[in-house]
Length: 398
Ligand SMILES: Cc1cc2nc3c(=O)[nH]c(=O)nc-3n(C[C@H](O)[C@H](O)[C@H](O)COP(=O)(O)O)c2cc1C
Image 1 (cartoon, rainbow, N blue to C red):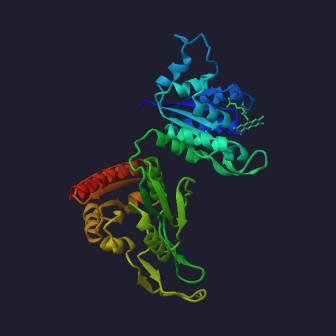
Image 2 (image 1 turned 120 degrees about the horizontal axis):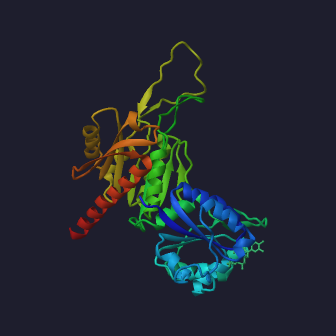
Image 3 (image 1 turned 120 degrees about the vertical axis):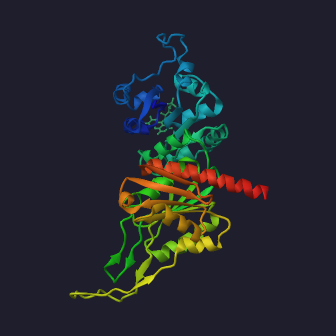
């Protein structure tokens, strides 16, 4: 497959030194990176460093006669998938807001035919300044996409908004800028990871869910333009800052938070491995004996209970099965009154980075897919969009 091409504009922000690492990460994510620097950017990091890391000579000069038709300011943006300005100075945002074109980078932005993503990075006062805020609003209205900034400590010692966005979020925003905004304005709630149920003061019952599927579903939903909230059980993974997370360690916390959050959600994907049983509460720590008996109480099926009452939220379940994947998953879809279910075989999925899934919807259509959890999550979200849009269309007709 042809690599996606990014024109990476680097401007005169102190955060420009971080672009060296950004280029490395973009290339690891299989992007072709062509760097263009402003004159000020070269005061912060050398073109040679960025050339070495991107594998391409860095461009700056609009008057470079080596371009065949002498039109570097237009040619470069023609066969590119995205222009990314990272970091973007306040000055460069002001130029974009006014349509100024006095160097190669600002000319390329004005002459572009592709999306433009801007990652502001500046001191908190510069960022809060009315002029900067006004300029950011203007470029947003003009269709420019913005990534960050975030809050934290600045190079000058100040604290507040204006820090260059973390690269995990920035790279998600890069991917988002190149795919369809399927879930624009939609709230997607995802539960993810495992739960702990206390046996006594020190011991717990848990399961082997790693939370990786939930993480990838959340990233895929974010990429497709949704507002994503994750109710996060025990997981080995951290979520990027662009995804809201609420911690829930056990069944009863999960249930409480799901029931509160589902009211505001258009779609709920229940991907957490929530304990079906919990031990009877015991005071203190059980003393060591040759044998102990733990009484387990059945917990309420959170998704099943919601399915019986819910009419508004599109419900997607996950079914972890040891055998008869399609048959068992289909049974759960019907019993819990879900809109869709994703069945997976435990030994091929739990704690692994890839999986084999059966995506089943109410019409009975079954899609069998094998792949990494990253790719499967994208496919699952695309299928959710297909079925969800159909249901909404039918609601309008009826
Ligand atoms: C040490 C130093 C650090 C600077 N850091 C920033 C910054 O983080 N963000 C910003 O918007 N401007 C910063 N500036 C100011 C810009 O470099 C200045 O506005 C410049 O004209 C921007 O040029 P450009 O937009 O063409 O790259 C800094 C200036 C200096 C001297």
